[in-house]
Length: 350
Image 1: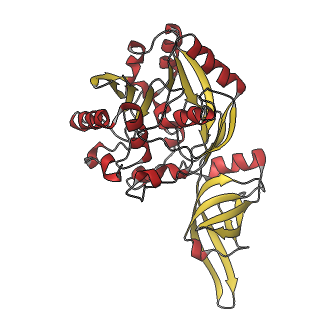
Image 2: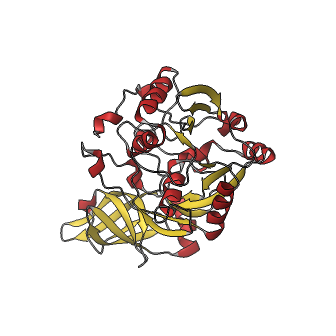
Image 3: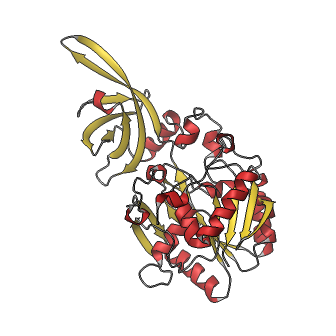
């Protein structure tokens, strides 16, 4: 299984830099096996049945991008440097791992000021990343970060425009609850209150799980033999209530439909040990590619993904590589919008 098997030509103009408004007006490609239908996300009620259960990732994206100044006093005088920081994950000791640019201009023990009230000291450099200790913690840190930080837009959007105030709303799901992600579970961005109400009225159920999406989701696959790729780790939790709800739906004959690859990876991680969904908490490095046995997932709602990405491999595992090729050929030909702010697909395997 080669990396080139998951490549395709994507015209640059199909990369979305803003989401559809309203959210549920985005286009929806529905693939039932190889049968493809063009629709809108607001049409989901046509394909979901009473008793089906959508699994929603309730992680909350933090404004993880910070810009600050490092001041240095030396025998040669005073110098300052602009330092750009993207927070990656918190550590138990209170520090944060972060991408720091340029890291070489910051020495351990030096401070970076991001605002009048928020600053951080570089504790160490580990594997090309900085280990930062902020001057605030808890709610004080969250409030200061909300003022000083910007949403961490994916590289393919950030290369085209800077994050702005609108992204604080656009790049967050309407049910975001547990802060900790540095990337959004983007399939969930298509849901608004009107769509949730329509699905509820139809008898579709919802279960919330938490997977804090990390910046590693954007890392490229660098090996040609994809089976040797090592996934990044992300923290997640399936509560006893969530596991019970999913198990009850399966027992009653309803379908389990994760919204997004993050929710899918989490529930399959929670079922990996026994083949049955169970409460679970920890870091998952699950890598889903063709040949994977799905224990919980019956269908998937997801956006359109980067060529040669692990997310393409996950979709191929669910739908088959031939069907994956047909789906993406159709999406490009019909000018669906791609990636985080793009359109969606509902994938129902045979």
